[in-house]
Length: 288
Image (cartoon, rainbow, N blue to C red; front, side, top):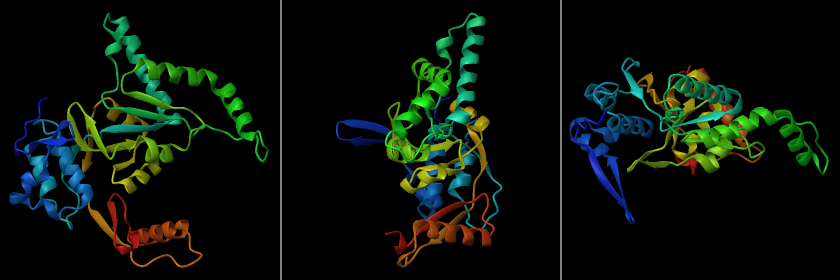
C-alpha cells in the first residue's frame, strides 16, 4: 500500500546529481521532541514513518515510538520492516529450498515461477559449514578448499543456481570469511538506497552475533530461520517498543587488557542488571 505520510515528513535529499526521497524526523519535533530519543529508536521511528500504510503501520504506531518514555515497561507493539536479511548456510539453505518449492508450486498452478522472489534483499554467507581437515602446512588452505568443495558440491551448485535465479538474493562463497566480518566490511550499507529512497540500513540475521554490525550504526539483531525467511518475503516483524539502556565508557584500557576482557566485563555488568530484551547503546569518552 502507498505510504500515508500522515505526519508530512516526506522530503527530498539531494546528493551530488542524485535525489532521494527521505522521511524527516524533525517533522515530528514540535509535537513530540523526538530529538531526545536514543539513536536506535530514531532508526525505528524512521522505519515507522517510511512504512506507514494505515494497516501494518498506523498513525498511532508512529506516535507510540515518538512518545517513548525511558522508564516505561514495553507494552506497545509495532511492526518493524528490516531493509535486508543476512543468512548463514545452515539456516539459509532451507530458505532457498522453500523459494524453489514455491516456484515449483507456481509452475504447477500455471503461473509464472519467476515472480517468486525475495521482497527484501537477502545475503547468504557460506561459513558455518566450513571444516578444517588440514592445518599447520603450507598447502593447508588449498587442500581444505578442495575438501570443502568436494564435500559440498551439490549444495554449492544449488546455491549458485539460487543466486542466478532469484532477484535480490546474493551468495558469498565459502572461504571468504565469517559472515559477521563480511557483513561489517562488505555488506553493510549504513545508508541504503532503493527505489528512489534513502534510509538507514537495518537487518535481521540468523545468528546471535548479528549485533556486531551495530558498531557501524546499523540496527540489526539475530532471529530464527523462520523469522528471517518471513522478513525476506516482506513480512513485517512484530515487536514491542524496547527499553534502551545507556552504557557509558570512560578512560582507557590498562596495559595488558584486551578487547575480550572489556567485552566480558561489559557482559558481566549487563547480566548483573538482568538486561534481557533491551537495546543497549554505548557512549562516553572511552569510545574514542
